[in-house]
Image 1 (cartoon, rainbow, N blue to C red):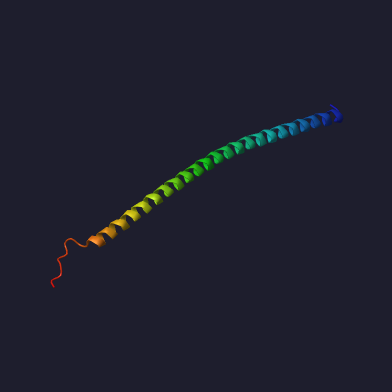
Image 2: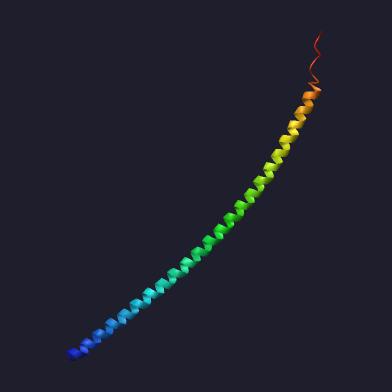
Length: 95
């Protein structure tokens, strides 16, 4: 074997090694990109669920606030009626 043949063999090995390295790097990059897309989809679904839950909580809060306002109004009306009627257990003052 001559030094030219040895050089060509070594060059072929280096070239093949370089191609293998490039293929491995590209496969890894593709895999990382797919995983990134998967994580982004999962995050998007999580954000959609959180937004829906927040909207439902806001709706329930508005309903509860309206119900509380109604109870406060009825309680105030009942207090006014009780003040007008007076205390039924109270004995009249002797005079």
